[in-house]
Length: 306
Image (cartoon, rainbow, N blue to C red):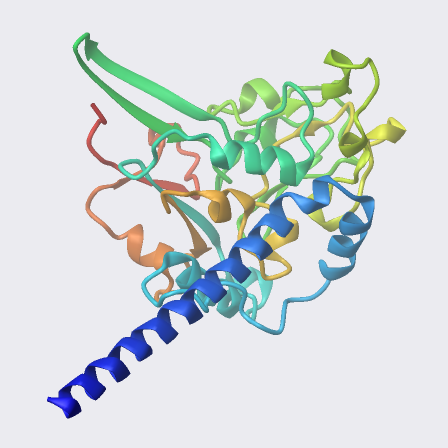
């Protein structure tokens, strides 16, 4: 009996230790996530540190300490593996599971914060589709970032040649070349491009830009201030998969902030990556495939939520 009691005590202690280790890790991870998403919007010092860190890939995986089954750890490993290859040998791809998306708008808000977006500019809207009549109503939420088309109509429509397809699949807007002609905006069949007219959120509160609105945006790996009447004001703007983050070994802000783990990201040229496996599923689809744009954003179809 005594031996059994000692064995049970030892087992209980081991469970407590594992749970305590997990709590410590999750607390550390939550702190890191909070710092990554919120702190840069509070202090200029944090923003400057982010710029300095954007030139190198972290030496230690940031998410892989999670449970092996957690997709963040899996995507972190996929991302770091992809960054070891030349840029033209990877193809950044996003997969969104419509059955998991609950329409919380967390990805939209995280994107606005990450890219310092002004009023009227939303890189990742979440569209709502409703079917039926009360009380038999069903709803589906569809996040719609830039589709990063293989054959982007916006690039063909841009007379200034400011939009180009990068070797890794991301469609880039060169703010220095953009002449504000706006021909790219109606050319996009997904309504993914907006125009930065220079407004600030502070215009609706105090008449002046708020302090956080004067922080630099890090889009395309270059720090730019909207307070100086320079780019990206008076420029076309759109999602670029958080290129500045993935180049530094960080997942896009929308992926990291998705509480339902409905958004997946990686290199589809890597057959072992999560996204490469997901786009081979029978329920995969892409929006407006009839347009022939070959988008790099895929969706896993699910049931309408009632």
